[in-house]
Structure formats: structure tokens, C-alpha cells
Image 1 (cartoon, rainbow, N blue to C red):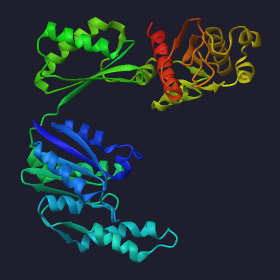
Image 2 (image 1 turned 90 degrees about the vertical axis):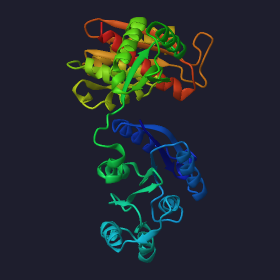
Image 3 (image 1 turned 90 degrees about the horizontal axis):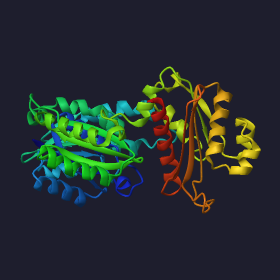
Image 4 (image 1 turned 135 degrees about the vertical axis):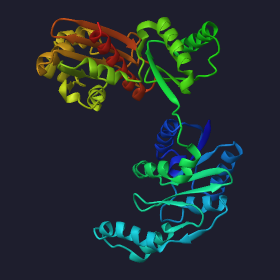
Length: 421
């Protein structure tokens, strides 16, 4: 199997000011091309560090290296000359490319104030330097990409802005160096994602241990597990010939964990709930989550077909005024209570004319907790106009942001379970 390494450049990525979107995107598209990603490296805007990463990946025996970033017009954009040096080639000036970049920039520059045209021309001239040995990829923005070889390794140089990199990718796939490496009979590496709720990572680790005892070696399957948004994900990568082994593993996990396995096709709980809500009218009443639940519901395309809206009743006065929560109920049980959560769900059902509603009320912290209601205590209620109801009170670990984010996941799963009854 072909192996690849990805080098994401940019001090802003290295220091965490910008999250890397290119590494994961490239990894997925390389998988579809039948190429296994062995490494994703991040380095700053320093020539020596980039050379070290290129050498490291070459020493690891990868067949393909892809870089992203460092193709701009400024002095710290040094990816192309550095890769050219590594590939033992020189850069030459391409006048036609310079003209094309200028034509692309001129309409934008005409709208800018106080344009330093001389500095702009210097920057464009820098971007018009291309490797003497290699293939140029036409720019999507102002930065061209390039494909070179260093020994037996194919190196693809791509721009850093994700929208430019992604739009340039088809040109990479159809370029002769890439096609020559991959061949015409490349088979995609299959990848599946199982999602489980209500179990822990140690639970799934024990399941995988028992599966290996019961089913034999799982060596043909590359299995990774992680806890994400209070759910356990089991991601398995394998060559097509190993699909029977994965199907046996899937059956084993399903038989052991039952309803905890809520998604076998990679669908998120947001997507599962969206499918279950077709033909319904949903409303939400949020206190501690303060709009996060509604935002996740609305993030799913097509949600306007079933999501009416919600009331963010953070203050008790809003619970009373907008949701008709009885003040005596609040006085007797407190805002964070199953009784108030149920009243909030009733109130938003009526206020918005929904046929199903979800409510959240809790103590997100860092202050406000008590022995009876420690920080992380959240109460939920799902109610339907027909009288169906599901209640839950949990203590969610984490800081304020984690508690609020995890509470939205709990609410969605409570809604899912009621809809699936």
C-alpha cells in the first residue's frame, strides 16, 4: 500500500492561533485514492524545520509528501524554494504566470486604498518563480501549486487557505506524477465509523479484547477509538478484502452493546435525530445551554422542515414570563430541578405550537453549585403534545464550556431515545 506524509506549514498553525483544516481533509481524500497517511507534521515558517520534516518523511519511506501553506508573496512564505532545494532543482521566472497572477489581482487591487503597486509587483514576481523540474498547478488564488520529485518520492506543494487547496486538488489527482504513482487500479481504503452512547472507552477496549478472542486476529483492521462529545467512536480502516472481518466485528459489538450502538453508518446523533424528526414540529427551551442545543439542531441542513425555534430562558423571570413556569415551582424546587425542566418543556410546547419539545436547565459553573446540586448538575425533559415524556438528571464533569457542550449531546440522545420508542 502506498504511504503518504503531510506537512502543514505556518507558525500560526504551529502556535495554535489557527486550527489545521488541511491535514484531515487531505488525509480523507488520500484514503479515497488508496493511499495510507502515515504522518501529519506541523512546522513553522522556518526553512531548516521544513527541510527536517521533508527528510524525516523520506527516511520513513513514504511514497508521497504533500505540503500546505507558505506559497504567499511575503518573506516568510518559503515553502516552494525550500522544497525545490530538497528536490535538487532551481526556481525559474515564469513571465506568463506573473501576468496571469496580476490579471487575477488587478480587479481586487483597484478596490483597495493606498495600494503600493511596487510592493505588489515584487510579491507577484516571487509567486511567479517555479521549479525548473516539475509540474505547475494553476493558481486558484494567487499562489500556484507544484509537483516535484525527490528521488523516488513525489512531493506536491499546495497553498494554505483551505478553499484554495481543496479547489486545486482535482488538478493534483489528474496530474501525471500523481497518476503515475497511484496507477489506474487504485482501490480506496475503506473506513467505517460506529458511534456508541452510554459506554466508556474502557468498555469498548474490553469489547475489542473479547472480539479478538472470539473472532481471531483483527490484524487486518486498523481500529481506533476515541471519546468525542460524550460518545465513543470506533473508526476502522481496512482494505476491501478485509470487509468480512469488519462485518464480524460489527456484529460482535452490536450484540454486546445493543442500543448503546446508535449509529453504524457514521451518522452523528444530530443527523439521526434529524431523520427521526421528519414530519414533527420541534421546539426547545434552554437555560444553561443558552442556545447551543438550538444551534446544533439548526446546523443540520433541512432543519427548517421540523425545527420551529426556541426560548432561551436563562433568567427565572424569562422562565416565568415566556414559558409560564409557576413561580411557586421555582421557589419550592429551584431552577435546576426535574420539575422546572418539565414546566419549561410544557411552556415552549404551548408557546410555539410544537408537538415535541426539549428543555435544559443546569449549573454550568464555575460557581453556583451546592451539595445537593453540584456544578455540572443538569436536568432535561423531552415532552410531546400527545403526553409522552422522558426526564433525566445528571452530573456532567468538566469546565463550564464542556458542561454546556456535553449537555447538548445528552439532550439530543434523550430526544433520540423517545423518538425511537
